[in-house]
Amino acid sequence: MDTDDPYCETPGTVAPAPAGGAAEGPPYAECVLCREPTEYPESTKGATLCPVCAWQEAGRTACSG
Image (cartoon, rainbow, N blue to C red):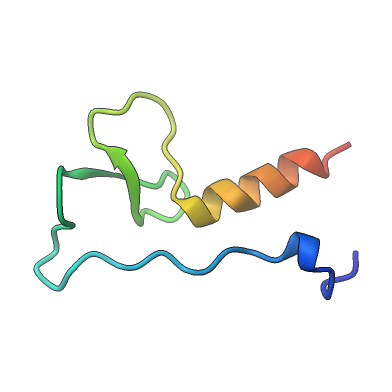
């Protein structure tokens, strides 16, 4: 696989939570892969992924032919 292909570039990093430890807004669920805060509230059911892990998982699923 050619790593210079712009189609397969990963998105930028997710901004970490503020120094106080809590993100602005409702308490956010942790990503099940990297444990970073996601954009989903803690009450979300199922496996929650941060945008970076969701992008990588979608790539693995699409390329698993």
